[in-house]
Every structure is written in C-alpha cells, then in structure tokens.
Length: 414
Image (cartoon, rainbow, N blue to C red):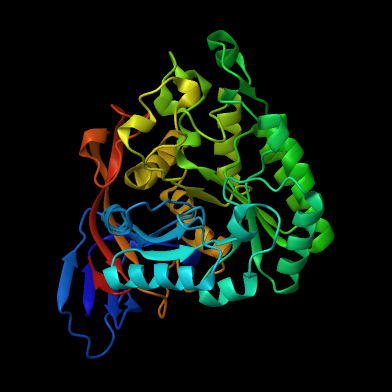
C-alpha cells in the first residue's frame, strides 16, 4: 500500500530530524521524506497535523501469554517490534519452536516478534542450547531470562561460544545467593514493613562478574533491567574502559521507588525491586546521558489472582505495553529533555541493541514502521480499560499524555 503521512512533526532521532515534514511509504519501506517521489499516488493519506510522527517503537522485553491479544495491544500502542524472552511454555531452546513463534506472529500481521533464545537447555544453566540453530531460526540474542546460571564456568563457556559467532548475550545482573528469598529493596520501606530485602550488592556483584567475563571472552554483553545508582556507575566506568556492554531499564523504574510499596501494595512488587529515590534519579540521568541505551516495558501480564495475595507471595511485574510511550514522554517532560532524546531510547537506540539497522528510523529504504501520536492530550491510567490478559499496574490514577493516532507496521496501516 502507498501511504502518505502529511503535516506532522517528524521526529527521527537517528537521522537528526525534528521538523514539519511529510513521509511517503511504498512497498513496505520508506519511499521519501519531504517531497513525494516521482509518480507516487497514495492509496491512503493520513493528516498528522498537530501530531508527532516517529519510527515505530521497539520494546526490548514483553511477555506474550496470548500472542494475538498482546501483539494487537502492542500495535495499538505504537509498538511495532517486540522482543520476547525465552521463558515461554515450552522454553525457546529449539529452532523449531522459534520458527513456529515467528510464523504465527507474521500471520497475524500486527507487531513484529524478535525472540531471544535460551542460553542453556530449558534455562537450567547447565547444557548449552543450540545457539547457532536458534540464531538461524530468528533469535536476536541469548539469555537466561530471570533464571540464574550459578555455575560460572558454564557461563564462561557459553560466553566464549557466543563470542566466537558474534552472538549477543543478555543477562539479568542479579546474584542469586544475595537476592534469594528477598521480595523488596533492602532499604527503609522493607525494614519498616518487615519484608525480606534484596540489597543493591546483589546487582553490583553480578555486574562486576559479568563485565569481567565479557572482557575476558569478548562477548557482546547486554545487561537487562538496571535498578541502582551503583549499577549505572559501574556500567559507565566499564564503557569508558572499552568493554562492549549495553543495558536497559524498565519504564516503571523511571517513575516508581520503594515508597510506592505503600502498605504492602502487591502491584508494586517487581524484580528487580523498586529501589530508593536516589537510585531512581540515577537511572533517569543514566538514560538521559546514554549510559543506559534503552527503555523497555518489561510487560508481564497476569491474572488478578497473581496480585491479590500477600506482598511476599505476589507475582512480580506489571503490564507495560499500554504505558511504554506515555512513561517515556513523562520522563522527558519532567527532566526537561527533548522529544528526540526520549524517542531515541525506544527507537534507534533500541534497534542498535538488537543489531537491526533497518529498524528504528525513517531514512529512505528503512522498514516502514511508523507511529503517529498526540503528545499533548492528557488522560488517566485506568487498568480496567487495558486490553488482553491482566489489569496489573501500580500506576493507576496517574495522569499521562501520549495518545496513538495511527500505526504503520511493515508498510501496513493497522
């Protein structure tokens, strides 16, 4: 379909564009920016006057218990590419499973799914999964998701193998022994409520170990869901030393802190846990300066029963697809950042993490993933209005801005 998007404020962070320009799409790709190509006849025309036009958002972590419902939700909220962790049922440790998932997603014609492959068979932390086969099937990197590798020799060998084939390894920086049995940040709120704490050292000890292993093996390391000021400082220092390390942060960690646990509010139980206000400020600053490359939704939908239990027994996580764009816009507005800087962390910078140079920007020839949104109109978060599985969110009642007006994914107007 030939599509023209006219009169909008075009923001393309990778190419340094922030101006009122028209966009033209043909054959699933960006055909032109500014002036229509010769002979171009649009089949659909979108008037984006008063709206922002940007690349489709890339979410580096979203769980998809109901593939069709969650991908429809992603697309409805401007997310055109979703990275799916391998802790599915069954675990994504066989190429045939990855191929089937990608084929099912493509058949739906909604958001694109890029799976992460299991680093070890069954995520058990022992036998290496068939990384070469999984990569050929479509996996963009390899991870243990939330499962630890307690045998460092096994992890070292896995990193060596991945480095040999230039596969990226994504790991959660959390020391299993230090975090074991903890349910909240080891700080004032946990002490007051009598909750078992997870110290910042659980993150920093793991970061130190992973960075040393990455430096030794030469693997491309991505640290998932940073949560502490000390962790940000360690990554900053490692980058300065030339270590090939990147990292991301969950959107809710930019806006919530340990105080949001309140009186045992199970909606605010996360892994890693919500930490101090100072940690939250450091995450926001690290993201602004680019030490943290990307923001993800860490979308974890669940049935209501998963949160309607005592805090220590509650499932971890929250819905995030509906809130990725609004929370990124809120961070930019509150910290005085440009829209271009904010959008880069969920478009071009996220694309760089997954190694997809054809995604996350609007240059001629790029895949035509486009999001058109109203950046000004305010609305209130109402979990009951969320679509698909689960209504779990600790952000209910907050006022946000950022309303999707149109989404194009792979040249298809959704």
